[in-house]
Amino acid sequence: MKITFMGAGSTVFARNVIGDCMCTEALRDSVFALYDIDGQRLEESRTIIEAIRQSKGGYGKIECYLGVENRKEALRGATFVVDAIQVGLYDPCTIIDFEVPKKYGLRQTIGDTLGIGGIMRALRTIPVLEDFARDMEEVCPDALFLNYTNPMAMLSGYMQRYTGVNTLGLCHSVQTCSSDLFHQLGMEDKLEGRKELIAGINHMAWLLEIKDKNGNDLYPEIKSKIDEKLADPDFSNKVRLEYIKNFGYYCTESSEHNAEYNMFYIKSKYPELIEKYNIPLDEYPRRCVNQIENWKKEYAEMLEKGVKEHNRSNEYASHIMESIVTSKPYQIGGNVLNSNHLITNLPAEACVEVPCLINGNGVHPCYVGALPVQCAAMNMTNINVQLLTIEAARTKKLEHIYQAAMLDPHTGSELDIDTIKKMVDDLIVAHGDFLPKYH
Image (cartoon, rainbow, N blue to C red; front, side):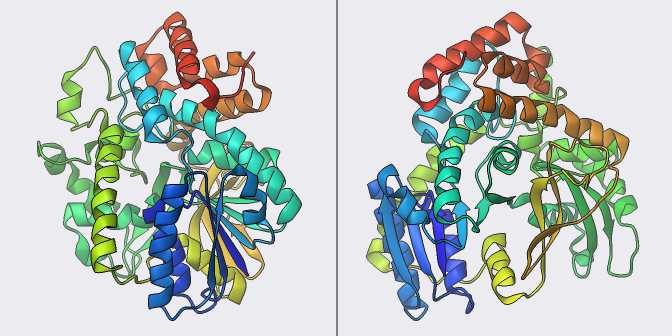
């Protein structure tokens, strides 16, 4: 069996996913194909993953493929393909995504999922995924493509609608949603045996049901603790607690993410909201700088002292592969096309995040039904942007980029139409060859 990792220069994540596979008896004898366009980062990943392989008994084999000219061979014959790429990296593209909008007074926190930053990230990533898809259709047509790259719904949705590749979008936020909330609210005693239902869209899926091991609804207790936390100036998860107060339900992704998925919290006319809700503007660039520096230190330490012991994590990828290979059932929260109206009050073209059963026959998304009307409405403000961005990538029409930005909740609430268009034009010029030509 062959497991190919696209973007293996994402060393920490590649180490975790492939290390998990090496901890799994059904997967450890695989060929692990590492692909990247950066030779130094690829070699760093190879060094670390090879050390893990040796520490786990020397099973399997690692192969490295550098550059676009070797991409097809990296994919040839793969059973599973894991995608974790970042087109344009932090420097220059993430910097551009933040600094150009800032000149127009538009501030962001993360900029990788929605907003103008998410739109531009999708537009430079989709052409690369399209190339992956063409190669996969030729050399591994039956492979399962596990996409971890953001913006999740736009990229997975494009692959699911416009390529022949079997694509499943995966995100960490479903796995940690209720456990993180319980820890923050001092409800750790309710963790064991809890039952939950989460559905919606990536980074804004809703905790629709949360019950203890005896089937008791835990939302009343959760709601009783909200005001105290919102009054705490140091509490950092206020936006999501505000979602519970105003929309009735908690959502999956962090408050710093969700602060920019709507028109409520980052408003130049109400600067006091930034402090009130602890909104970390320019958070993602800071994280990128810190991650780059931390990785340099970690790699140097690893070369000196050796690789730390790797134990299998709860990350979805290896568990999905194991389930398909062994027919052992496993349940995840996955990003799939809503074509069978899994969520009845969201569009069929939308990429939705719903419970999925995995077994030897593959991925089986579960029917959810209708979301609460207000939750579906919130999702639609994001889906509008996702669908228009996908349309822009498909048609190469500039007007669809303008429309996606105009309908983005945060962008549209801060800037007028002419300013939005000028900002988009400036971003396209700044990104240069990282974007295709639009007309």
